[in-house]
Length: 331
Image 1 (cartoon, rainbow, N blue to C red):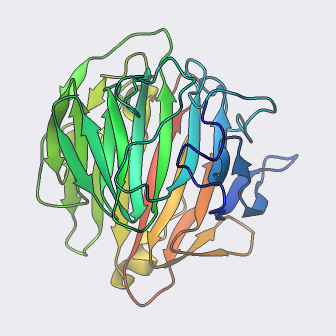
Image 2 (image 1 turned 180 degrees about the vertical axis):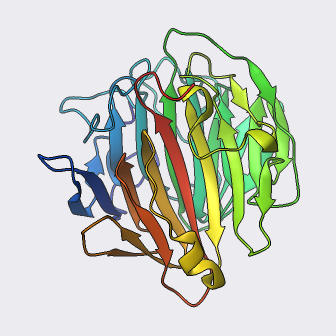
């Protein structure tokens, strides 16, 4: 695990994240279960623990805070973690623990985990170094890190803040790698592959409607996670709201102010969704409940409730959503 203040993770740089959690009451009606500051992770005050699943979820009600006594930053097989990290500048030197066998002792910071990681840079700049390749990343850039040996180095004199969802592998059917290619719409997406990068640019499976709604499909696992190398881009004709194959989908959706009413449609999915408001102002609406007003940086753990997102600002709003299939999931 990461321990102590000398490893560069900057315990004195505490930060907060607003986290709204939805759920159901005793008769199954959608409710806001909590709305407040996300707790610090066991990793330290510079890390927020947003949500934790110890295994593949059987229902939308599964998961919660990190278990008491947890010592491993990697979730158990089939599990999922969502955390925010703030890494302090270290003179562009690599950082990493000395007591974890997954980390290379000769090349500080290099490590490999049996996970698919969804990384989204929020602020600052950071370099992702692989065995034979490296890329510099800034605010808005996204990474699909697929079990590759890698390390992170903060660039410049400002901290780097990012969101990280780790999907741990469990036994199951591996659908294989569907490939990843670049298009012209959506955020920058870097996909690691082996020792390098196989895609760097907007995802190929992204679309923009006549009304200006942009939907970018950043990744599909196409099944519950059984290998860090599985998943990829699906054909645009297969784009759907639910994760295909009962797996995990990561997408970004941007809705302009002109589409506020047409886009705010009540809907429900059999998923646990990790949602971050990237830009703009939005109201989360549940049937029969007062709307919850959200701004850029706010987060929602949306757990299978009927809901709608309504743009309440003068400009576009963008949300980033990791959707996790539960149970057997849609087939």
